Length: 283
Image 1 (cartoon, one colour):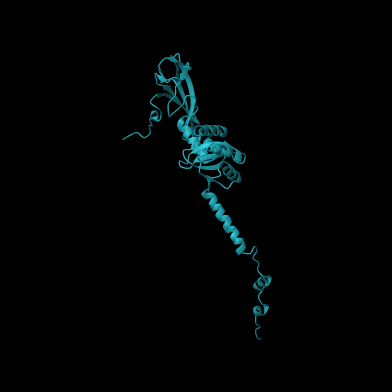
Image 2: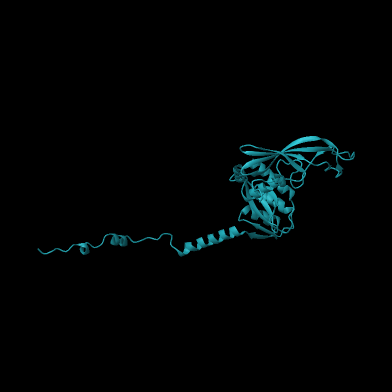
């Protein structure tokens, strides 16, 4: 029978990183890891190098475990680039798909934070993360969204969706543009006025259909930048339009006030005294 009380934590990390020690505190876990790489590709010239410049310590955050913050203290190598024609003299390791050269969080933690933030607003997502044991601020989540938007600039088709998004609810807003086919965000614009969206649409003349809400600023930007584009209302605002139409129709069918005549109330509350008089008994 297998021992279910033992978990092989090494299985959760790349083969190039070996766990040397785990320190557990009241609110956090610190994994000490050592790099097992002996050579690495230079990001400048793509040549493979094996000459060490030295070691250094990296402290990065990972997904929490049972509401405990998890940090990885990695002993990694820095390499010399011996190519005299390369502009880079030294470079550090990265672990593709798990941890980049300058990242302070693992890739799996960043993916989770982006998914959570896109489903909420930044401050709300940061509050949820604090309860889960993840150390992150709303401003950091904003920077992550901006980085995501900068990496995805061109739409893949001729259909997009446009909506506003709150960095901080009631205070700071931006405009999110999503691809109509993949439903993935492709750009993030400052503010939610017509100017930023109009400038973006002017650079993307291939757009033929735009799904939007009822905001007049978005309608104006689309009509001026792409006069031939089709405007499509999203389902939420179609329901809102239907409810408003029903409400307006009922105004003409039902009176504003329904009054009950006072005579009817008096008659109902005060019955005839003659009918309630008790008959006299003969002596």
